Image 1: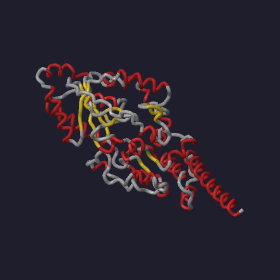
Image 2 (image 1 turned 180 degrees about the horizontal axis):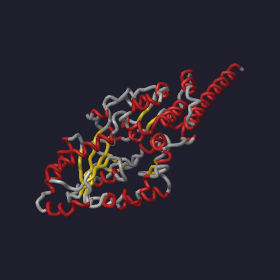
Image 3 (image 1 turned 30 degrees about the vertical axis):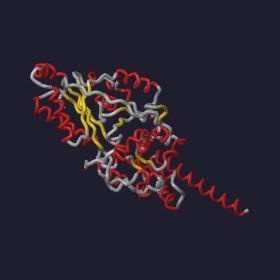
Image 4 (image 1 turned 45 degrees about the horizontal axis):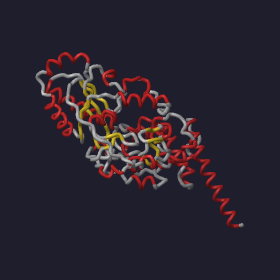
Length: 379
């Protein structure tokens, strides 16, 4: 990647010869050719968003995500993260896999594992960064070397705020970007540039009085419109959280073992969402319909082999087993479920053992409750 700061003088001279309005339209056309559904541009001023971010951090709602605070205000000040940044190109790419089994059916099948739809295929970080770099290469071919840096959920970047400023959508009450044309089943990526490109206008918000996402959250993590307490969010608990899942929240996870899509599933705007045509996001290893007992039986080698190149891989085998143990604790009591859990009750990891013990205790209690109920009927 080319740092921006040492190219700025050259760009000022070149800018006299470049029609940036024309270039902007070319960038959007090239982006669509590369598989993005929309590309737009902002001249970022994130001062209002910065105040909200600092208040959120001050309240500790980021949980263990120390990286949210470690870069200071670079997250909300693009020119401090990448000196010389004048405009940001934001891009949107659909990810909803057309071959994935219906989410509602999986969530209603407690013996199966629910994995957030974004994680069923290839790791989006790699796909988006590669495409964004190709877009940057197209720009370089057109105007010569220019200062830029490519991002996709890979640095302290306020992706939703930048995309909203560029007019790719608006921030929904669940804190994600929403589009009238595509709902919210898409990834975002950015190119910070030293180019004085014309900015696109933002969109109006269209959530109105709707609170479906807030009402649908299994753990009530959306504590107010546009405000998520990550410490209660299932995506945080199953992915970012490295330790024990709070006991009070475990029953609320249901069979969700990696992420949670409930707020998106409840959003009326997602009736306009489109399935992706990107093969990288197709379902791998039948993870959209996998049985919890099958996944718990994966060895560490199997886990690495089957999740290599996916977003799931980064949580590691230990947290994978932790999450599945909780889901099995929430599953109906059967011999297969108890047998699967017992196979892991002496696991070397204290974290895994703790969650397996909790799950087994749930099934012991379930058996006791059933016996007591039968005794009362007999009497």
